[in-house]
Length: 202
Image 1 (tube, one colour):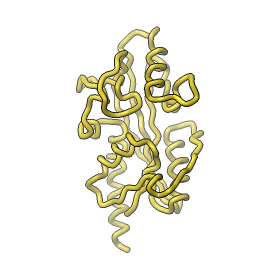
Image 2 (cartoon, one colour; image 1 turned 90 degrees about the horizontal axis):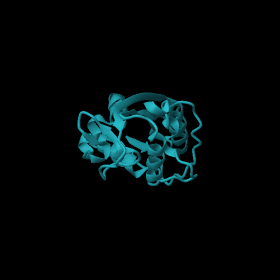
Image 3 (tube, helix red, strand yellow; image 1 turned 30 degrees about the vertical axis):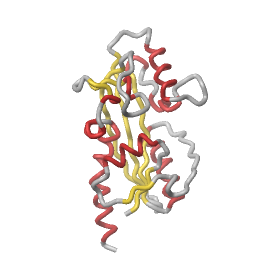
Image 4 (cartoon, one colour; image 1 turned 90 degrees about the vertical axis):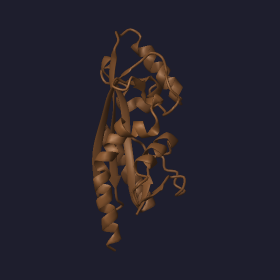
């Protein structure tokens, strides 16, 4: 079975490949399939955006696709940046560092602890239109000073209280036990296994 990962984010690809490495699936990136889709994620929920992405890539590739949409939700900011997590900065083409800096700037007037959570919804889609979803949530808090060099995005300022480590200080095996993306993919994993078995029947 071939499965296209509908993301060009290298960090996401590494995480997902590690989560699915022991399944009998050939994991492909858009680059490996020669796809350069520009998908407008204009949904009003994570599930809507994951669905838009998954269906677009499934139609373009002709194979099963796994897409996700995720975001950071900070209580003190009424759930922001949320759906805008990847675009959360005053400049039009922000880097991860720009987004972290802007978030901390907006939190300065709020009392700590800055409670937050990462949320992820994954969509598994087939060119026929069949689609399935799963969600994962990882609670934590934002800290004012970056720690760690692993991961990407907001990971260096997202503290996991029970570990006393930021997401960026965790090893890949540790992160893939408790991250929002890991929990979402773990939830949809049984369905992936069922699809693999179904593929072998033909």
